[in-house]
Image 1 (tube, rainbow, N blue to C red):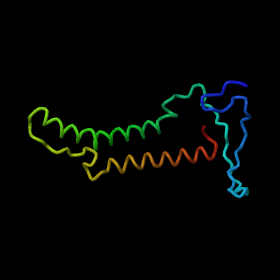
Image 2 (image 1 turned 45 degrees about the vertical axis):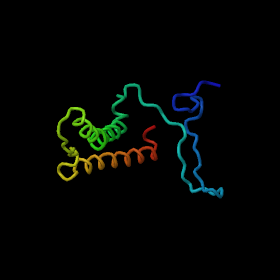
Image 3 (image 1 turned 180 degrees about the horizontal axis):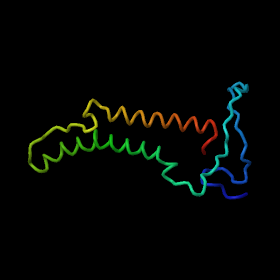
Image 4 (image 1 turned 60 degrees about the vertical axis):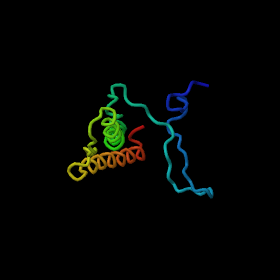
Length: 124
């Protein structure tokens, strides 16, 4: 048996094997999902295929900084330095939270688009 690809599927497996997503009673809904995913073309830029997860990670780190790390630093810093405490004002909530609405829309729409691409078999 050949060594499996990084996606965990045997490279010798047929490209058009489908998994039937039927009901628990054994009946079929007629909906199938392709089990073998095609790799990216050789000249494909990694950023073109990974920008959506990168945007989600970036949003996570922005929120961690703005709502966890910075408030803790503004509480601990004055104790260590002997200065007065100034409450942290979240930077992303300036302007009525439009940053979160915008980033939520970007991540939501791209996640929906990626799901549609996967269902239609356009990407791996």
